[in-house]
Structure formats: structure tokens, C-alpha cells
Image 1 (cartoon, rainbow, N blue to C red):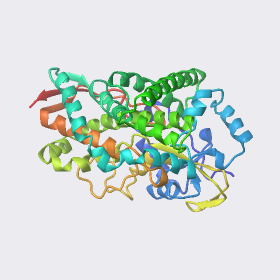
Image 2 (cartoon, rainbow, N blue to C red):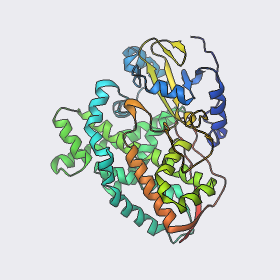
Image 3 (tube, rainbow, N blue to C red):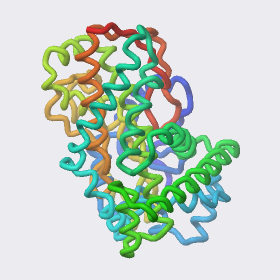
Image 4 (cartoon, rainbow, N blue to C red):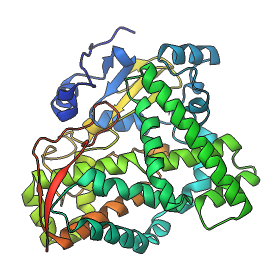
Length: 411
């Protein structure tokens, strides 16, 4: 199928990392979808088009629905996804990258622990943890908000839900980041080896943790999943894959949006002042942080049959890239879309996805952020950037500052 528009850009460049939004604006101005040859993908940038694709029940995440095993193997070789035995077993297959009955069965085993009611039971525990962390940092006048604070909360909380000892959580973050980095477009042999090595170590760790819970069950998600496996609702590989996915999802994206959310408050000091004066706006402020800088700005879908998509016919097996980061800045959906507004309402952003793959951990991520920002605004009368030269992560699939040095003064 000849592309209607050829696209040339470098999502690994520093310029794109620092500000992808002018590019997204240009993309939204193009008629229809835009073909990106480097990824062999049709990009959807407008909110309307992204929503149409992710809500279409004939769009899937797994190639198994649209290609033979031989075709899948050939594509994996072409994209350097091959010869990664543990990565293939536990990362390339997951709840996130499954569809239909398999996805529904696996999601059902863990969904009940991520409902608003269950998540809200963690509020006091999260508050106590955040208070202790801030206590240890409050004597300093300058910190790196990412490394010193944000990076310590999501992983520890999701670790406690799953049943991981607190002292192991820092290592889980390292494994998670080294595995997830291979999902972006830089798939060098060096990055590939790193992803496979860390997947293997993560697998061995979770296998030992599972063995311990089998001997002495506790009130945690690992023990719940053991019962699900015994009941025949998941197999051993699905057990490890699901546990690994929950821990990885509980780290990176929430850390990223904590960093970009704080950066937004500091770039828009009038909005920080507004939030200080009226903390009833915290829930809408957190939603705005997800809209303004979507931490996972790119996902994909495959068409399971020939179909019309966004006003054009596409063949079965066509790959679509849905740009949540662009859709959430679409001025046709969000008035003054490039302005950060802590009171924005309505705010039907798409940072958590839509449809069957709507983010399982969205309630927990938003609660973490609510508690962290509420605590900081109460305890510190002044929070400012220590440097205005803030570098963002490179790549198409992630969005967040590498570090965020701030100064603060206790109230």
C-alpha cells in the first residue's frame, strides 16, 4: 500500500526528547494517518483517530492474530527481537500484549486488587511511607526530585501489593528499566543482551519468591496468583509474566509522570499557587499531569482483517501506532491544549488507554501522586527549579525527565 504521506523524523534525537509537541502538531495537520517507514507503522496523532483505533474490537496488540508463526519469527529476526529466550517467554508475551480470552482470563486474576475500593485501603500505608521519606529529605535544601523522592515511592508500593520485601525494591527498579528500554526503537545488540540478562535475573528472583509463598502464604498478590495457578486459571509462565509486568508497570511510568508533573507545576507557578490555595483541585491536577505529559505516549495495534480506518481502507495485518502524547494535546479535544491547567474539567484524556487494555494500575498511580503532591505542598512553602536545563528521556515510547533538581524550604 503506497503511503499517502512519508514521514521523516528522529524520535531518538535530543530535540524530539526536549519537545515533541511541534512535531505532533504537524502530524495532526496531515490528512488521514501518516506512514512511518522505519517502524512500518501508520501513525494516528489526532484524539479522534487514536480513540477510533483503540476502541475498535478488531484491533489487537499481538501479531499472533494476523501472521503465521514463520512470519512472526522472520519479523522478530528483522527487528532483533529473536534469540531472547526468557524475554520471549515473560516479556514479549504478557497480559499487556495478549488479546481476547487469554487477556480477559489473566486480567481477571489480578483485577480485584486494583479496584478503587482496594487501592484506597492503601492510603494510610502510602502516606506513612511518603512522610518517612520526606522526613529524611527535609533537612536538605536541594534534591533531585526524581532520584531522591519520586523513584522511591511507586515501586515500593506496588512491591508491597505483590509481596516483595522493601529491601528488594531498588533492584526491581533496575531490572524493570533495563527490560523496558528494549521496547523503544534503539534495539542494538548491547541493549538486547542487557534486556535478556535482566529478564533472566528477574525470573529467577520471582521463582524463588513464589517458592517461599507456596510454603508460607501471605495476604499479597503473589499468594493470590498461586491460588489462581492451582485453580488452573494461569500457567507457570503466565504467573511469572504477570508478576513481572505488574512490577515493571508500577515503576517507570509513574516515576516519569511524577517528574513531569512536578516540572509542569514549576513551569506554571500560577498553577502551583492555585493548587496550594485550593487542594480540592488535587484530583483534577493529577489528571492534568497525565494529559499534559503522557508518560507512555506510544502504543500499537494490528488490524485483524481488511477494514476502513480513519477514512481509508487498510489490509489485514497493518500496524497502527497510536500517539497518546499527541492525542492529549489535540486542541480540538482540549481547549488551550498546550496550557497546564490544574482545574481542567472535563478532562477525558487518553493517557491510560481505552477499551480492553485500559490501564489496570491507574487508580494506584493517581493515589500515589495525590499523596505525594499534597504532602509536599503542605510541608514546603517554596519549591523551585535548581536548574532550568532539564533533559527528558529519548525515545518514542517514554516521556519523563531524566532528573529534576529542585530547591525547597519547609513551611
